[in-house]
Image (cartoon, helix red, strand yellow):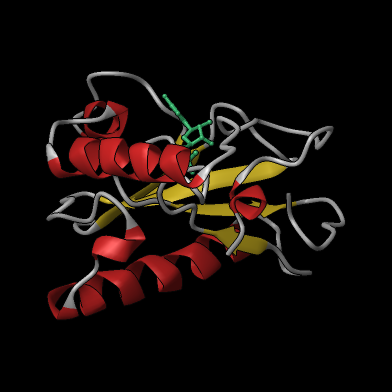
Length: 154
Ligand code: AMP
């Protein structure tokens, strides 16, 4: 894949990822992100789970939490996260043992979407790693809706 496909397109709307211009930049970015991802340190989402910091929680069970995104990209935008990260800093870290929790997150995403009035449709997004523009290294599903979405995404 040419390096340009990893870079944020110039002039595209929304949050920008750091522009990446060369193979060396890609390797450097990935090495840094893998190191960060493997540190297993807490993220802001751990503080939301422990209720240390407030969030607009819309669903909770033993396995997962759903709360409104602080920077919504549509009239409805919430995140679904596993309460126990268990190595799932990002989707690409998933192993066989994660299948049940991954299914639970996806099932919950659609159930809460319907509860939130998104019966006409919605989008579920998982940003993975630097090329996917991931910023918080605790797996999360974005659920976005409440307006007509377009394709392709940026
Ligand atoms: P990503 O870039 O895919 O890792 O998404 C992380 C998301 O977390 C972004 O959409 C942020 O707006 C959202 N976010 C970060 N901090 C908070 C917070 N304190 N409460 C709710 N959402 C947050």
